[in-house]
Length: 559
Image 1 (cartoon, helix red, strand yellow):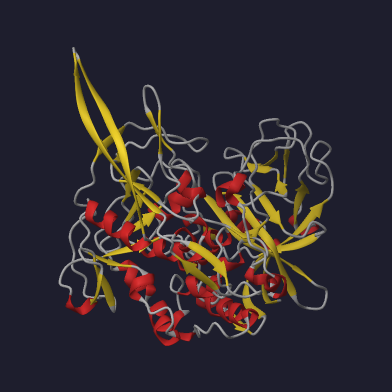
Image 2: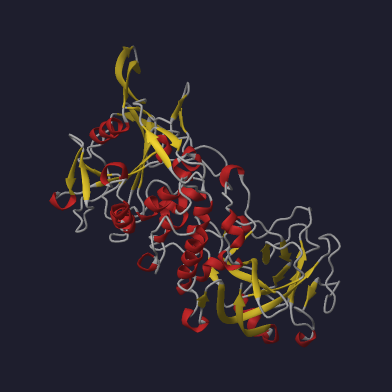
C-alpha cells in the first residue's frame, strides 16, 4: 500500500469536540505546516546509533548530532508493496515502486463584497519513493534529524537488529516528538464546516501493528499526520509533567490511553492494547512488548529462531511476578472493530494465568499501588504460577434474573437481607446470579473492556448498613459483576487481596478489578475471569470485616 500526503494541511486545534459515539466535528485551521509545536526543546543525553539528516537523507552517527531528533512511527505495509517470501508467513519483502503521492495544493483569497473566500488552486501531484515522502513531511514540519527503522537499522544484520530492538524504548522515549503516519486520517469538506475523522486513527493500519504500540506508549509526544490534516497530541511527559491538551476528548479508549497514560501502564492495560494488534513476524508479539514491561528486557533472548511457544511462556513468566494484573481478563466487550484478536495456536497451549486466549482489563493501575506484593509471594515455575492471598468463595446460581429470590434473611417488606444470611456462619460464599437477556442498568464492566456474564444484585444502604436486594428494582444498581470465561462454572474464588484500581476517564466512577480462579478438584487452579466492583455501592474491605468467615488465606498453584 502507498500513502498520499497533501502539503496544504488542516490543523486540528485544541477544541476537538465530538463524543464517544461519533466522529469529532471541529473548526479547523487551514495552514501550511511550519516548525513543529512539540514542546520544550530538549537535547537528550541518549542518542540512537544512527540518525537521518533530512535535508539530504544521509545516515549520520547519532553521537555527532547536538540537537533534538524525532522518531517515525508507521505501518510497514503502507510503505510499499509487501510480498510473502515463504509459505509459513514469517518472512516478508517490501518493494517500493515509487507510488507514494504528494499533493501540492495552494490557496488563494478571492475578494467578494463583504466576504473573504478562500479558494484552492487545482493541485499538482508528484509520485515519490517512501524516502522522498518522509523527506517532504520533515521539511514541512521543520524536522532536521529523524530516526526510522528502514534507514537506521541494517535489516540484513541479525546482531544489529537484536541490539537495536533492545534499545527501541530508549529511542522513542528520548525523541523530541514521534511522528505517526495515519493516511486514513483526513478531512471531509462540507458546505458549512469540515469534518475531521479523528476516529480513523483508532481504526487505521497504524493502530493494528504491534510495534507501533510500543512506539506510541514510549513517546513523550505524538504528532498524528494524516492525508490532509494533523493533530498534536501532547502525551504526559514523565520529566516535566506536561498536561494533555489535545486528545482528552477523543472517544476511543485506544487513543485516550496512548495520550493520557500514567507514568507506567499496567501489564493488563498493555496486553489489552496488544490483543488488537498484529505483526508480520509472530515473535514480535513478544519482542515488541518487552521494552514496555518491567523486568523483561535483560532476561529475554531476542531470538527469532527459538520456538514461539517457548518465547511466549518465558515472556509471561518474567512479567507475572512484577505485575499480577496479568490475571485480570475476561470475555471481551465487543464493539465494532475493536476486537480483532489474532488467535494463535500457541495461545491455547499457554497456562490460563496468561489470559492469552481472552481480553485483559484496560486502564488498571500497576499492582504495587494496591497491595503488598511481597506478601503475595508470587513465583513462576515453568507453566505454574504460585501465590498466597486472601480469597472469597463464590457460588453461581443458574437462575434467571426475573425469578431470582435470595433465601435466608430476605425481608419481603423492606427488600433487605443480611449478606449472606442472618447468621454469617450459615453460608461460606457469596451468591452471583447468571445474567439473563433482560436489560438493566448497572456497573459498567465495559469501562475496563470486558463483558459482564454474572452479577451480584446487592447494594449497601448507607443509612441502615443493610444489604439491599436490587433485583426487584427496575433501575437497580449492580454492586459487582463477573466476567467469566468458563460458562459452565458453578463455583469459583475471588482473589480479593489482589484488588486493582481502575484509572478512569473523565467522569467515570471508582472501580476495583479482581482476578477469579476455580479449582480443578486435584489441588490445582485455573484462572477463569474477573470480578468488577463498583466502589460506590460495594465496600470490599468493609464487607470482609463484617463477614470474616467468608475470607480465607490460601496458597494457589495456578495452571
